[in-house]
Structure formats: C-alpha cells, structure tokens
Amino acid sequence: MRVLPALCLLLVGTACHAETPQQIIQTYAADAAARQPGFTPSAKRGAALFHQRFALNDKMPACTSCHTDSPLNAGQHAVTGKAIRPLAVAVNGERFADPAKVEKWFGRNCKEVVGRACTPGEKADFVAYMSAVR
Amino acid sequence: MKRIALSLLLGVTLPALADRLPLPADTPASYPAECGSCHLAYPPALLAGGDWQRIMAGLDDHFATDAAVDAQKRQEITAFLERHAGNAGKLGNAGDPPRISTTARFVRKHREVPAKLWRDPRVKSAANCEACHRGATEGNYSEHDITIRELKR
Image (cartoon, rainbow over all chains, first blue to last red; front, side):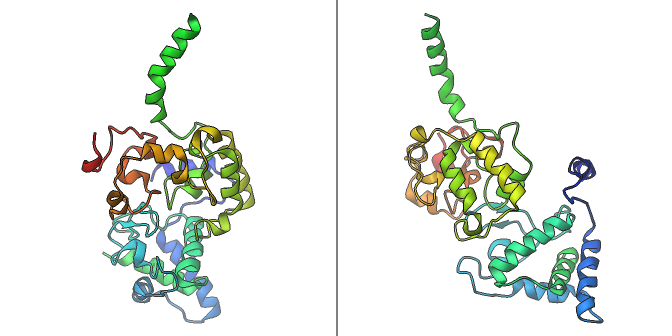
C-alpha cells in the first residue's frame, strides 16, 4: 500500500488517486441521492445484487460465476481460468481503493453480466457489501 | 572459426532462453493493467506483429468480451506489442481471430499435454498459463517448473 502514493506521483495526470472504500461509497451514494432523495447505501442490497442470477451470459450468469458465492474467497475467471483475488476488503485491502479502477470494472462487468450499466445506487450498495462482509 | 564457436554457443544457450519470456523493460504500465486482469499479460513475442494489430483493432469484441481501452492506451499498447512481436514464420499461423494457442510453436511445445489436463478445472483454458507454469508472470516457462504433477518432468 505504501507504494501507491509513489505510483500516483509517477502517474500524475492520469487521474490516479487513492481513496478509501468509504469515500468511494460516498461518491456513488451522493450521485444516487441526487436522483433518488433519501438514498442510503445498503450492504444487504449489495449482497442481493452480488448473488443475483441475471442469466444473460452463458458463461457468466452472475457475479458469483467468477467471484464464487462468497466475496471472501479467491475466484477464477469463468472463461480463461485466471485466478482472481477476493473482492472483500476484509481479506484484500487493495480492493476499492482506486476510483478509476472501480469504475472501469463496474463498467465492464455490469455490461457483461447484468446486461446494462449499473446505477450509482447499485454501485454504492455493492461497495458497501464488499466493505462490510466478514 | 569465430562464427562456428558463436553458433555453437548460441545452440547451447538458445533452448534455455526460449523458455524465458519476461516482459520487456519498456513494457508500458497500461499493458499489464489493461491486458493482464482476465488473462496473463502475454509475452509479446508469442504472436506476430500483424496478429497483434488485428487483436488490438478488435478489442470491443475480444473473444466475446468488450475489452476496449481508450485511444491513447490502444496506441501505446499496440506500438509496444509490435516492437516486441515474434517472427511470423517461426510462430506459424495464429488463425482468425489470432490465438497464441493456435500457432504451430505453441502446439509443438504443448504436444505432450493430454486432452484431459486441458479440461482440468485448475487449468480451464489454454489462456491460463499460470495454472501449469507457476513462474509465468515472471516469464519462466521452463518445462522443469510445472505445477501440475502429472506434467512434471
């Protein structure tokens, strides 16, 4: 983690900055509240989203297809077989620390698995679950 | 005479070198970041320049996945891959879409791997170099350093 600030210095101008999962949740939550007054992030809704079976993609019907039933576990890419480190912050402190990276993977995975872009509210809930799950 | 000595020397060292494929020193940070999440950031020498160009031109439908990157990164990564691409003649045809695992070189190097091991859940696909080559991330593809016991030599 100590290398992260140094890396960011090297990458000045490429929008790399470290944040905490809480800050990332807050940014998404503020965005969600602007559309839906009174919105508060919910780890419970995040858990439901993580376990929901969308079944749009044969090889990746749900988040769990690659990330397993528990975000505390290491996963495996459903197509390539590559190992995937756990999503839960409790076991992988590098998760949800770079807003650009988080946004990139929501972009790719929501499109592929959910079949559309995820809403800011869904993203806030999802990150809340990944920060809370023990 | 010197030339003979040199070729003898090369003949002795090259087979070992061929199993060492570390990422070049000038690898842009965008390469492992954008191309090393779903699969290993493959050594550029494993495909010919023209094949890398085709891969990079079709990232929005990359083996049924949208792996598109922004224009600046695409340029940077394509230039890097072309700079270090392998020799098309030695690699053999990679097919369409190009796949490293279709090249004659890959097929020859893996001809002793039984079909059931390719289907093993630990391996899952030929894209998963690290399943067997535990040092693949560091560029070590030596057949003496294979994790799966049945394939160990």
